[in-house]
Image 1 (cartoon, rainbow, N blue to C red):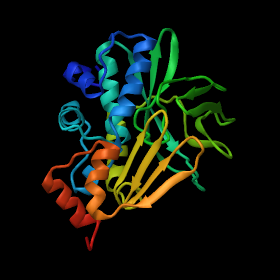
Image 2 (cartoon, rainbow, N blue to C red):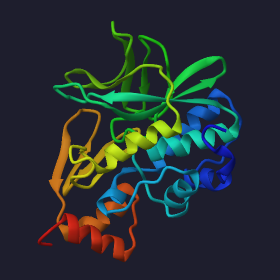
Image 3 (tube, helix red, strand yellow):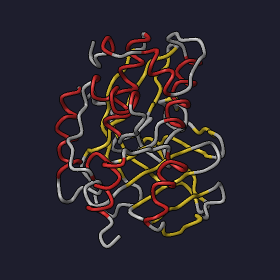
Image 4 (cartoon, rainbow, N blue to C red):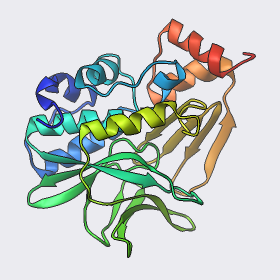
Length: 273
């Protein structure tokens, strides 16, 4: 199996995401699993902040995100989801994207997403983009436009052949990332992961980043800056004092660090606390 799905404890994974419905390789299951995963497991880079390696093997992903109920960033989230889908019987292909999200220059391919076949169609799946990411699969077709909860998404094929995932902001469509359908294997993401977790220009090595999407709200914590955005696009922003940080991690993002992990996070990334 490409994604080592046979090593996954499916029952524990389903319990982690709070899914107790029917499990079979059809579109209804794919949609339900995608939504349950995104809303249960937050996006976060705290392993990097704690000076630990980001591991992508199924055993490590299960231990971190299922047993210890932590989150992860795109490679971790989508590897875990791919393993679960593969184990259930879906055909899953890895893809790579260039994040746009307001960038003024071309960025490298550093984002992982999935292409999944269900009921004779190909579906764009991504449980690892964070706050502005999809809640459910999107039909992988030029011009598709779908509302998911309070959020609207679309796919547009550019003259280059790249597909662009967009979300609607109050002032119009906003490009999140662009990708081709060139397949990527797990070993390819090992290289991307190393860059993203260690390179000084990576946005994920500088400060804690946590994000969580729900059908109604998009939450983001960057350093000590907390932002909660509703459908009107107007963020409610505030700085989180260090003495409130642990409650925010648990209450807003579902991240409950050990006492030692939290102490290390404060010591390294919130100096002067």
